[in-house]
Amino acid sequence: MHEVFISRQPLVNRQSKIIATRLTLHLDDHSGTKAAAQTLNALADVWPMGERSIFVSCGETPCDVDLLDWSVPQNATIELGSAPFVGAAAGEFIAALQTQQPALCLDFDAQAAQAVSAGAQFRFIAFNAKAFTPAQLKVLATKTQPYGIGVALNVDSAAEFQACLDAGMNAAASWFFKHPTSAPAKALNPGQAQIVRVLNLVRKNADVKEIETALKNDVALSYKLLRYINSAGFGLSCEIQSFRHAVTILGYEKLNKWLSLLLATASKDPMAPSLMYTALTRARLMELLAHGLVDRAEYDNLFITGAFSLLDVLLGVGMEHALDAMHLPEPISDALLGNGGLYGPFLDLAIACEGNDGEAIAEQAGMLGLSADQLNRAQLQALAFADTMEF
Image (cartoon, rainbow, N blue to C red; front, top):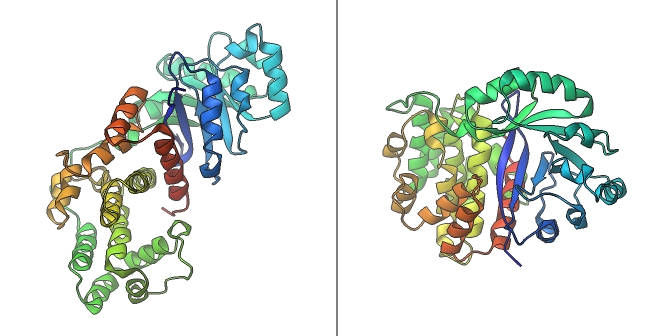
């Protein structure tokens, strides 16, 4: 059977928060939705069961009744076009839907009116933002409101995102927030510089008292650090009460990993929570993919590479300036600056999973000797991990 690779997009709402993830299964001409169902069933034990919904699309492959061999999780929404509701097998398909009753999202097309009258219930109606003008979207949003919540797909920029919201869409599937909207600054602000100072103290194993003094200069920083360490994703058996306690329980190396996240929280960007969620998903994904491929001592550095991979956007400075003040290991800097190195292929793969090119994902995974199942499982585990964190 052809390996089915999965890519993902976030759904961002009016409050600029990620409310759902859209997974796209990349099926070739020889793999129908039966392969999609088999792929999804194989991921049941790592499926994220957090509060965020997960939309599932088969991309360019038309959906049919074979997809319903999938045991659909409660938080999943199947995205599909009108074809299954109007073709010769429509009766069989609708009967199967009525048996399973999964949440559905209809991809609006020329036959959408027939689909909504076929007897199925839709929770969402999705519109291809490339196919309609904002004025057309506004009319369609009003007409389809009784049939489902309007969401936009294929939104490439902040301007397009805002136009979709103005047209009445409730959310949009897009990575628009990964791109800087203003010219980068040339230096860190004082708050960011303070976090870098603490990071550098931890990296050189400074005395605990010296690090505590630096942390006490910023009460909010200390609070955020403890909140991260005590998050469910960390899996500690006891609650960390102080920095000294954190050093005792975790040690400097593990603490460095979590303190690194704090630098990103210094961002004032309204999209910071979405950027943080994305960076943390990359971080955990890279860490998981590294198991068995690099020395165990490298895992935390791969996590930090992913966590820092959007630092330029989060901090509003060029990546070179963001890294200048930090004494990072060379493989981290090389990957973040696009110079390859040991961690570069892992970051390239993490970024490829945010695109819509299944062949590129397969190629990047192949360079690391990873199967589709290994990559898909790691992606879902990374999403589940990010869901446990507070931003």
